[in-house]
Image (cartoon, rainbow over all chains, first blue to last red; front, side, top):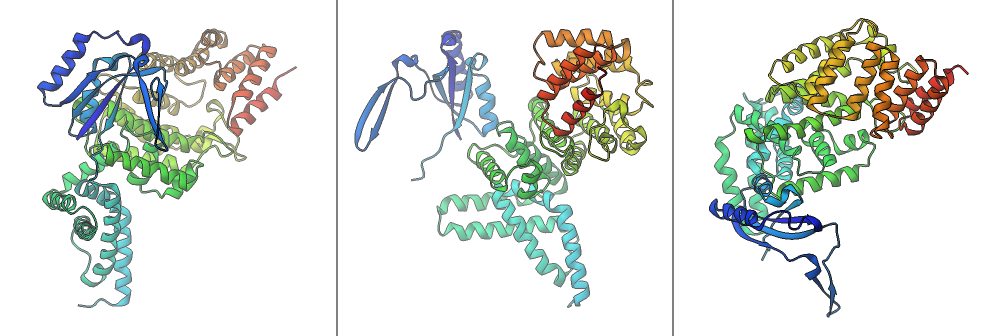
Length: 110
Length: 418
């Protein structure tokens, strides 16, 4: 089953984990076969939110929800079940300073 | 062979008794075999309906539990096949095959493990805390949604929704039906123990409202504690069972006939339940036998010192202070510090205790905790510092949430000399 591990960090902690450590985490996931995708994101001042209402598009500056912790990156992992996904999430370096939200991926029913 | 009416009734009574004794075990196994709580619940009911039809005719099977598991599984497979016509066929065929595959694993050891799997799944930390409690009472203890709602002063629809949400999270996020591996066990067990103790405390001292104690929930928690110790005799599980038994042993002495709160030092110790104290004390020994004592075992040890003391004066307060010191090292908490301060007052006099309590309050940690002010008031009263005592009682009364506690404090305040 696929799980999306969303990395949330306080703005001031965005750079508290070295990139080399994040890369090592991705490499480790790749080696043990759990890695599907992983990216770090630009800070939220670069975010744009798009909505379409009644056929009209509106574009606003900023993330969907302004919160103290912001989405800083993600890992898409393949895990047997939630317990394994939690174990993998705990090894993501920013877990030490921020939070990792673990979301199971829903297969589209088509 | 036909069985006459009387013995058919006899078989039905026996079947009902078997159902009461075995239904949660059978359910736990069906969850594993079917991989879904709702399917398992439905299968359990179908199996029991089949038993009521067939047992009066054919006699009670040699192993009713295995019979019910097997009947439940076949009913579920039937059901899945019927639904498969309307739903996505491949998915369901795959499901049916996986159910059939595992049919060989219904031996008795696997079934005992299933009960443990069920407990750990219901108490999974990925579920909301109140959902863990509701799900455990529903699925492990077999309480109805109405019973749980009543016990927690909630409404059945709220409780039902909480349970439905928890079950869909188990299914959709794929929370596995398993006993945690050794490296996760301590943490996951902590979550199970927390749920059991929460249920116990909800029964022992209702968090708000008039009634101070609710017998049913405490009894359920002790039953759960016994089941857990039987399945997984870890020191902290034993410690929790001991703690609950020792606290429960004081139930009859804890409230006056009018429902007023009676403090430990004023309780009629002849009302304490000796059987529970004996059992609890023996379990404390067992829980402390290991290398490192955990918080539940230490709290149980404290309760055992009180339970075995003939009076407040003849209590081994030195031992109590020592146990609090150890507990503070294992699990630092201002509430434990407060309890230790009260024990210090008993050992070294009210002045010594007051100094410790004031130091805790000065830090601001327990400023909103009514019992901290109540304890301070009591020590001031004993030292003859009436105006300080009055101020602290008033603060405690303002913060107390339970009616009996408030009434107790108001009585104390009224008794203060001018």
